[in-house]
Image (cartoon, rainbow over all chains, first blue to last red; front, top):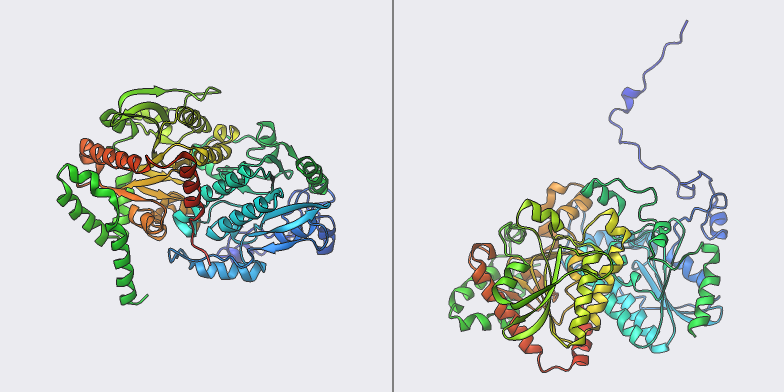
Length: 278
Length: 311
């Protein structure tokens, strides 16, 4: 005799659709799970399959910089709300929440440091802060980092991680493209090099400005590097997308990168590049 | 904001507007009075409805495009084709010609008029090849010290697989960098849609103008609505929130002047629209005439580096 079955589906009819409930420490590629200290010890790279978890700006700064050498600059620069922007929630509320959640004042950390003894300027983005979007404050911080690098004659290492311009600042966020481009041009006139380490994701407005102007440009494995992301390309053109569309690997093949460098090897790579420029 | 604050704010905006030299050219033609009336209307009326009206007029299918203006006020037009590497992008036209007797290099987006031309020109959405072509013509301008005139009218850079593979983001970045390096006078005017990176790639200029009903924005209203409201149908709300109209762009210090259009919009009278645009371009170029090249470049970079509002 078959067991009577209770249909539990009914109870779930009005439940929200299943979301991506993956724990942030679970590798989306192979499913391996790590403790916080394990991940931190492995530079947030999956020991099993090599997947690169997102790395917070502070952690990357601490890792690139020689111990104790990092001096933060422009830490007080914060976003304003010039348009009184309100979508489903006010922009100021989103900003306050982002600061609370990330402990960051903005989506970029800048400052000077040394790397294996080479003096450098750093401009590192934090995707956790409103998707690493670039508004006036990020543009200003990057612009100041270029000036500081030019003044000291030290190479600038920029680490983008961004969904693009910050829509809530309207046209002013678009103007951060030419702003950062002009800052790089001024720095280049002072014969100071820009080294770019593209991380997941480097897209839209950031890719279409300073991130693409590196004298040396490398990327992390598997990073999405695209002006228009795969979903929007699919929706607008109905084109069939290649398997590795927009990924670092495709960008390397098409000539947009100098190398793909896994996190564990980045410090050595940067050190080597810095020796050539100093 | 209190009512009084709003009033003060509005008054400040108005005083900013009346300082503009934008009507000087038009006065010569004796149409100043009517244009000033229009401007009054523009100043008084910045409601959500008027912003959406700009969006619709900026995209009007009968609106004049780059080549319509070229035909009306550029003499000895010589179109230059191809990026010398891969292709000739029809969404972005380039060439040399004379405006008011002086040779200039012209770069501009071009939408198509009929279905076939629209497809051929990808609705004015350029591939990286288009920006490479523009950079090639800017090089010619620099070599022979010719001013650059850029006419911007694009929904955005082309969002396709091949465009990505050919380096869309890098092309837009390098086009801006190329404009930031020029030592010749540069004037850009948004003549319709100034859509995102694809637009700013041609607009790193000493003088950036906008036609009265043009829009300049970081994303299309539909795109913004789809992301922030999760519904592309909320485009009107999105436009009202991010304010892509000429007056707000002027207010935020993003553009240097507004070019008037004939009553009802540029599509109603291409000849009149061309007259106003020509006089605005000529005036901007004359303004820049006496400034040495390296000073032009220094001021241009300083202008863009000063953009943004932060604490």
